[in-house]
Length: 289
Ligand SMILES: [Zn+2]
Image (tube, protein in one colour):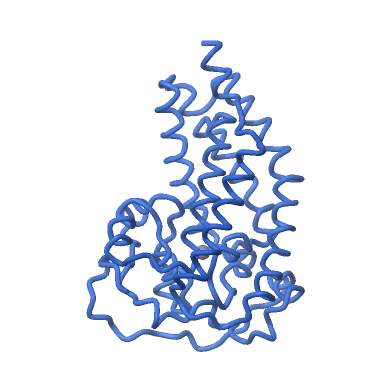
């Protein structure tokens, strides 16, 4: 029992975490240069600088706000055996696997809410307003969205009974997967068709970043693609070449400088006619080029 407890309170060594995340980011950036999926509309260097500045604020928010509240909660949940997974007393490997699957599913619900609750959408909007999508978009989350997500994260930990190790593993895998599914990497179509049966892939998530509302209202999953399959919100039939990335009301690059993106949640979103797409001949759940 002491051994079990020692394992679950462990954290991933910082150096390993940094290596995994930096390694994934660097590999994706190289592949984006070698095998781009979509044509870019904006200058990559200034876009990256802007997205990484927003990411820096986001990382500081996680360190200063989320971690001091959520890390002690994981320790208390595990010590006092609170929450579903702690009461089930499962083998360590199974508990970790179920933690990741359930955290991923409850993140799917949170992502859905960030689009449907007007206050949450205001803070999710800066992420979607990027006119191109690549690994840097994956890190471009408004600090306000991360503050608003803290009570949700705390509820996930408390209700599911998430141990410190399970949270750390899920956070690292999530970060690596969001860099992957936001990436502008052209994966051979046949391979991506197989991959998206299990995981969220670049073409799949590209559809979620479309300016067309019916396409944004699909593919909310983060790591595994099954939550979208379960809820009938999986949409794979839109070819990447026909997608305009971004938000219809923010298509002017002059409106997308660093300070404008950071102040976006505090200004009313302009109203423009919503783009629509002619019906496609490809079945909804077959992945299009
Ligand atoms: Zn979204």
